[in-house]
Image 1 (cartoon, helix red, strand yellow):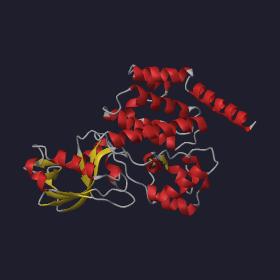
Image 2 (cartoon, rainbow, N blue to C red):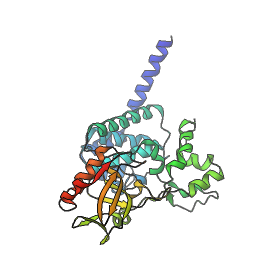
Image 3 (spheres, rainbow, N blue to C red):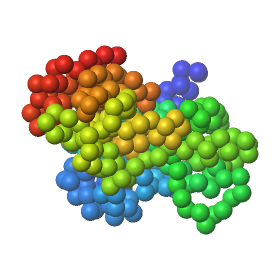
Image 4 (cartoon, rainbow, N blue to C red):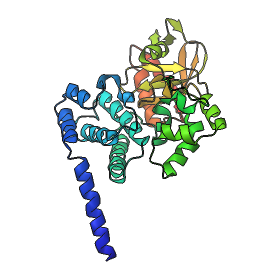
Length: 321
């Protein structure tokens, strides 16, 4: 009897998953991705895809299903491992889904897709590093009003809470039976003291325009920013997912981290650089957000070895863990 009940339950799960991904809107999303009809897709999801998935508001009815359908369509029907824009987009959708309480069938499918992406990153050495799922709590912006002691619904500002501070609440929410998304949970189930800590530990995520001031250029092998040689010192750095830009800046714990340069997106390399007289002479793979390996250090060396940057001088850089 128990075996029969288990079979019936399994069939029910299977049919519910099939129903979720066979709906007309799900089929249209998949079709639009396959044919690269992104304008149609934008209309279906009531957003402009070019402006990034942060415009999705967690908690809308059926949105988890639509987001997951979009993610599956990207992973199964596009060259996402070669197109870094698609890769970054898929990563952000993963973060949005992780911040919602998904129904069991959808959650199982979501977990399977995430494992597939993580396996691809491990096996394909050209793919950038993704932050662990725990960092979704920082990557997905939440309304400032959710962590305000005095609620102000007119305040539409969104902030990125520092994962080290929000982690306990995130894990508590994940383990709870609550069906609400994280931003609503944080608004309802945190004490005034916890909200104060969250308010004082929000991470700055730069816009592309603001981030451009941190891009490093080179002149005669020397590292420069905004036309001036970078002063001596230790700096955190990232190379973006496309491998086009190197960003360098000073870390400020709780407000300015490796994730700040690229708004939490995947990166080719991350760590710390040591500069003297404009020359990068040492680098290490220290980044709690990205947890890079020496493989990512070699990507830094390849980047710096370009003749338009440091050229042959780069072989003298001491790169270590």
